[in-house]
Length: 435
Ligand code: NAD
Ligand code: UGA
Image 1 (cartoon, rainbow, N blue to C red):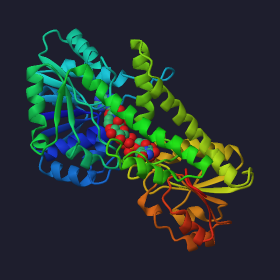
Image 2: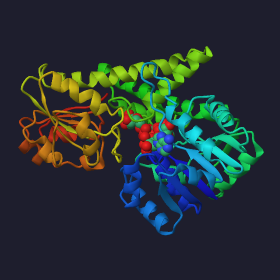
Image 3: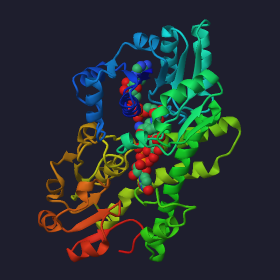
Image 4: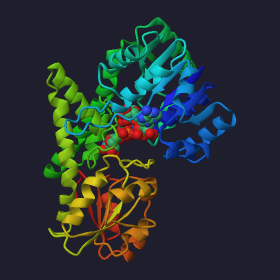
């Protein structure tokens, strides 16, 4: 099949490359010329493990192309995927559909023959109806079906998630739309991935419900961590103890600094707005969103507390800036809520991240970026782990201790057993575990 992917970001690029790997002929379109130029030169605009290899091999096979020419690629496509951003709208937190609507207008002008238009972007219930109306308004003669096909991949594990999904959700009641989507995903459902067909509004809602549920699970365990600290229990054992019940499951029960990233924060907010407009009161999701925001903003207090109440003249070393490991994405990263208050309280901040430095630099003025974890720790009064990159899991603590002003580790990701740090002579603070 000939597929066009509009938006060559985290989702569009991964989806486009994986579809090409299945044998489809894919054109990735982006209106960011630098991005397309860089892809044309074989340079990935984002960090996602394994992406460079899969892109290179499919470009070499001539199954994957990059262009800024949306019209030509839409005209020749069997299916056009919209994978542009849907950020939070300034002011009210609803999903900003500017890019989706603009893409729909451009698609309308270029349609030629029956085409399936697929929303892969995360869009509020009813967006498929809006896209359909926009296209009809622009081109009353167009022959098309608008289908919802939300994406569930995680950054950092995106290729595996895309190729081995727990499920594929397709929202359409149009028989031709259904047939095309079956063909698009044939290699995956032949490989046992359940393909769930629903109506379009339901598919749109499944995506928000999934993210809101996962965000709720994280927020629940974070609350349990707070309680553990008060009563002297260990949240990791609580998570293990409940997670072994297969009705609960062990995943997404890692307590930490609060969830970040390009999706959970914005999608929980957008879902609340959708519900408000529909006259439904989502009290659990509203609480999750509020609790998470206040949690992230309280993390700096823990560092202040660990340093005895004042940061004046102190140096803090931060390990990990991205919102999670194996990505360079800084959107809504907990480090962005932590570092400015530390600076405002008088601390100098040094930081290191294996992949996030380029995107972090403009977002964190005044932070000294170090060349590795040891350089970062040099001269610091406290070392703070914010993102659990693998390379931070086996630090040489004798070396770290020798370069720090004092041996204090604040670990927001619970990656070390407290006993190990105590054995190295460190004061160790983690989340929801006895000190
Ligand atoms: P992104 O910002 O990384 O990429 C979006 C791309 O679209 C950008 O490169 C931008 O230049 C391009 N674009 C915007 N308007 C365009 C137009 N008119 N024509 C051509 N290109 C255009 O965004 P992302 O993280 O890939 O997210 C895309 C969507 O997928 C969002 O709705 C998001 O919620 C959803 N989603 C994201 C993830 C994730 O892990 N990032 C996972 C699942 C779903
Ligand atoms: C999340 C979902 O997991 C994907 O299914 C979804 O497609 C995607 O959002 C999206 O809609 O964009 P992602 O944001 O890439 O994926 O990363 P996650 O692994 O879900 O982590 C999100 C945040 O939650 C991170 O800040 C992470 O540190 C935090 N988290 C996650 C925890 O604090 N504890 C956990 O147990 C799990």
